[in-house]
Length: 396
Image (cartoon, rainbow, N blue to C red; front, side, top):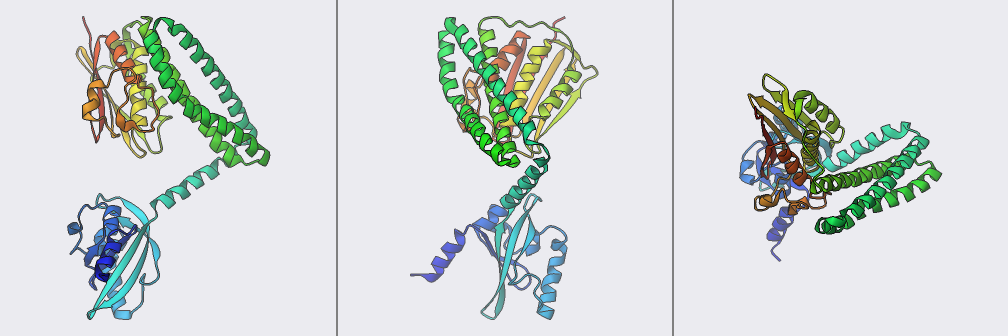
């Protein structure tokens, strides 16, 4: 067996990062795991550079002093000890990791090898545990009341679904497609509600408030999902039956947009932020406030759903003379180019949505609402995100 090749293969495929430097702190080698952790694509970007390039302040400025002190005194700052430190990625962001350094004498040279173990997920988990601990102040009986109310909402939602399906006798194709979709989309949240309700009964007996809070939150999310599905179907049913008409009146668009932003911010993921901005000398335009609000709600809801945590959603309005332009832009997963032609068809969902829940009705409803107000909706999307634009022209 070729020992050198075996060792090279082990280092190359190691889960943790492995970096070697010389006595001056110059990087001599770095494995793929370390490149990924620090956000670099090629080892050539780092080899020959001082290891301090991977350190934030104050270690960045102090590192050469650490090495000099070790050579002069032999006192080990980190060698052979290991400690938790922070690293700096190529984009300037930092992350926690555990670093273990060993010293090797090879051919009259001293080589230092650093083993890097990413602690990001561990720290995120610890932070989540701290957040859950702050919620223990709420009493079990208050959560029980919430549960009762949520179960009532679920029963009402079931009744509404039954009534809606009954009214679809004259819309056989639409009804058939909805039943097919609902049988799939309803199963997961209903199962989650049933399981969480059962577990809550057990946790109440044990007075386990943390678990009660956790499963109450799951029930809330599932009920919200069911409500969204039901809302989409009811909206499409009214459109198909010709019961929706646009009543255009002068709307304070800025006030409406600010209210929408405030309401939708409550539904965002962790550290997601909706940033609203208006351009123009006036904030008034003739539109149907309800249809417009529902359309924007749908677009921002999609932006929240298909974007990750720690992202911004840009929401802009602009009024110039007789034209009103509304845009919603995210940095989410985007829509595959080859599928964009079907974007506004009912029940259409792109293949990259994965397990993200949805009915595939929202954008079809948005387009039809916008058309009722004599406007147009366009979409530009790629892997960096998606931008929807609603355009309205006021006819004098």
